[in-house]
Length: 403
Ligand code: PMP
Image (cartoon, rainbow, N blue to C red; front, top):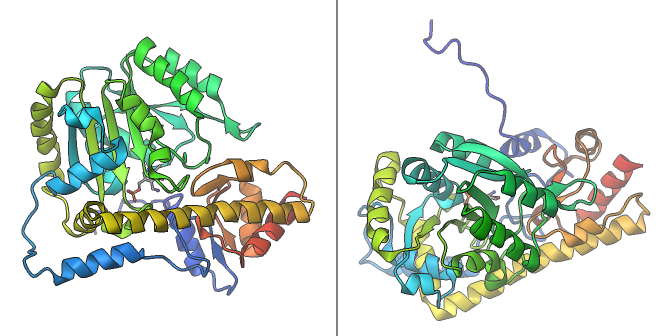
């Protein structure tokens, strides 16, 4: 008998499982709104034109080889990534207070940052994540060695932010606790803080509680169409001189999903600790995967270091963001035209890749069964997976699910 005969069948991942179910459906009209990946109007995955150009340059460069990178990846990539999120004129960078390591996309950056904190943080080894949050947060941080608790974030009644609940919970959390914040385009709710709310939150975290913000930046540029606007919260925290962790992903904003390219930046208060922190960060990474892969980071470096490509990237990024925003308007208008009961203004107000529709599990199951529309059970739909062609089908489905 196998030594693994006792192993139980694991459930499908709540998000990736949607695609598994979608793939099994033979219907020609099926629509996958589960996965958080951009699709064109034609419903196809998109490789950005600048990415193609960067790949051509890399391919033409016969001096490139396949040697191992250092433990923290491509130095130029790290510098450019820090500048992208913090701003080129960031005082923290100029003062040598930022340590950046190329990691395996956003997930890997969170995991490495979490484990570094579990090993070296002098404060409580507890991380607070919003409720709800991207489901993987709840799995990444405990495995990294941090106790994981939640703070209130979303108010289902208003389909908006529970700002008072959030502040109350963080005030009640231990001094010095780590606080996970979505830098922009909160997943799954699409609900973000206003600039005033960010400032109020910052004062609580910095002044009242001496807590440590850990930003998850998976959608820079993808939410508003502007790289700077979407970095507002991160820069506000970093520019007050306090310590900050940031996990960046290039999955969405450069469409490099499967290349697994991202970065962890640790901003410290005192430049004299930076080199020691970096040395210990390497000891976290080395036994995990030794060093990151070259290809995706080489693409990113090529684009970010070339002004013409950088500008072209911004245009393509804005086009993706704009298409998503236009899907919000089309869906809202389609529900209005059908006189679907309920207030659907949250479709317009929420930001980023997802709309948290407010539909419940039964309604989602109904829409999947009757309309072949696939989405996560919490009622989250990927606006990036929608097109002018599929909006009427989705509106019909929602209408018939709620009446
Ligand atoms: N954080 C959030 C909030 C996300 O939505 C995602 C992607 N779904 C990630 C992190 C990480 O994604 P990746 O590892 O593909 O960069």
